[in-house]
Image (cartoon, rainbow, N blue to C red; front, side):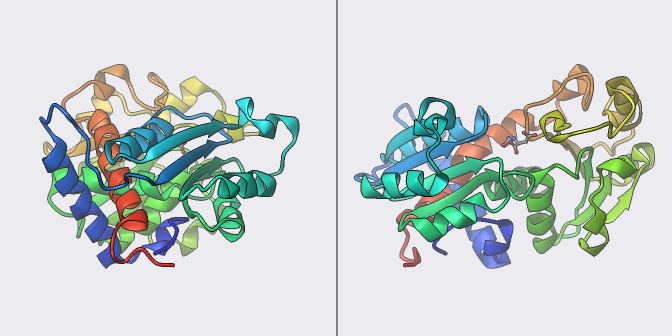
Length: 307
Ligand code: NCD
């Protein structure tokens, strides 16, 4: 594997080996006072973000630094992008400076794929519009495997704004490949037209789905990608699709609650549920660092790193 552009770049064996590597890195680094491995010394990793981010950008930076790479962060607002430079010219500029890996977040679907045609560097898609966010799916798979033992046969319910969600698209591809049974719950207006071709079941009744779920993944309502009214009001959305305490009580005892963040507390999920023991949201964030270390290792340092 030369790039990680979509969950479809992974087969079950590669995905499982990334999850295993992340587990080993987590074990190796946990509790250590100095969290630094020499693995990527002398390699240059650039994060290039055209959309805002807290978790994804910071965790790629931390992952690179904990493996001793030189990490450079470029964000569109404070770079020549704001002077009108094209993505291609930005790619050529970063390549000319010797970037070994470019981690790209961009509002257009397919941007990471285009970038991979313009640069000799390895490219990681950190979110391209409504399309894909493969490292988020990997960190979600790591978190689910940690709590449920396996993904095989586990019932995962994904709730909310599926239409605009790259997190949902990457998770559907990856989790189904790893054997999970996926159920999507969303208002009819927030399910994509092509969902009938996805390896999922769909519905609109969250109360009915919860007792059947080993895990529930709440999605952020992507207001910035909405032009027009997809639901009557935030309050109405919360009434039907928000994970309140009363609703969460319908989950089986062992079930866990995920959210990729940033969360809209009170709309998608109540504060009480987000802070409850069954919410594994901060665990997702921690696993994100180890998953991104595993991906950087796989692309830049392992024997299999392709040309
Ligand atoms: C997600 C994203 O940006 O795609 N956040 C993340 O990466 N953790 C989800 C979102 O913004 O809703």
